[in-house]
Picture (cartoon, rainbow, N blue to C red):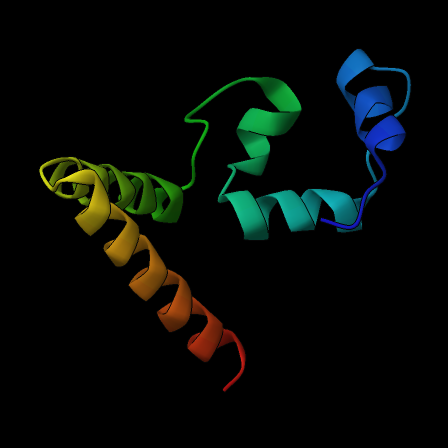
Length: 88
């Protein structure tokens, strides 16, 4: 997220509070519900995050059914697809 480890540790300890831009990055990258992050109330993940977590879990279940060599092949293919999408 572009935040130094010691800065993140400071947030986690409660020594300092993150800026609005850091909170926006949490929301964008991790699909975190900012209300939950600020207050501890509500769902941790935004509705998009919940849907994404379900998809990731479904992918993991299917990939685990494959032998290790095929799992590596699928991982390589996924990385290629992601790399292609990032460089469009």
